[in-house]
Length: 177
Image (cartoon, rainbow, N blue to C red):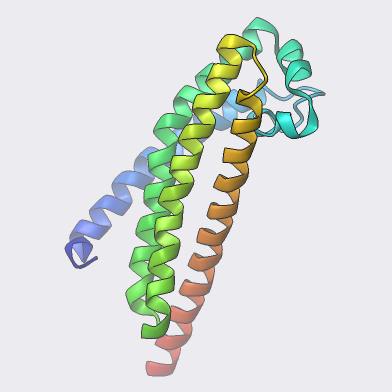
């Protein structure tokens, strides 16, 4: 983290954030076209469709237009993945040195969980694209759902680590200042 201190860290943070916001807005807009009765949560419903045996129903409800939107969403997600994973990694690596020394290694570990979540998301997207292209629910639907589960579990751990780490850093600053 020493190489990312000061102005380099701030520059990276601003750069990632500058790209993150418009990509997130675009993805939310695309996702609104994917919300149907069988996919109430849009692309997130599709990520888990194998667990509820609703993949075929979602594909049918979407039709060709919806499936094109899903492909666009998944393609844009490949840009979004390094942005969210990078921002979360930077945030955790930035808060780690501000907290008590005994918690710093755990916070840094949580930062790497964010990167692993990005990897799981990449594999999930590949499986969903194969599902869309081949209309073959097995094994792609199950692979996507398992990867999505892993991704969300790792992101939950990372965000929890960030909240706890930021809270500890704030308390430590209050005690010393």
